[in-house]
Amino acid sequence: MKSTGPISRPKRDYADAGNVPLVVLIELYGVARLRAGRETFEVEGKTLSDALHALGSACPSLVPSVVTQGALGPSFLVALNGAQITADPTTKLKDGDVVVLLSADAGG
Image (cartoon, rainbow, N blue to C red):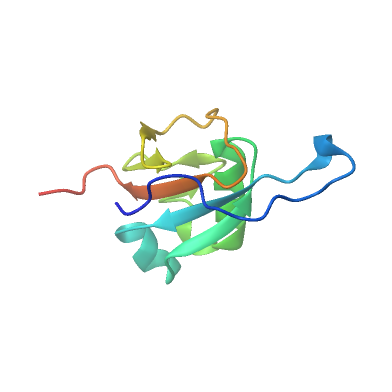
């Protein structure tokens, strides 16, 4: 995995900080990348569930095997910023986080 932390982007200036969209980068590997036909998506979401809903909307070919109703399929996990492995849809996200989506049964 090449992701080591949040993506760097210029700070945005919003008058109402409560309405700041949180943008995360989702990197796809293995089956997910093959089905999507691309490597990355930038989506908005305050939780992993929000980001997965947005990913499914942006790339319907990932539904239902990779993502469904804001959750990961049974064979998938994410690595958050290269440090935390999870499938918990309630995981909180921060602006600029990198979510690496990979098959849980990949390896060798």
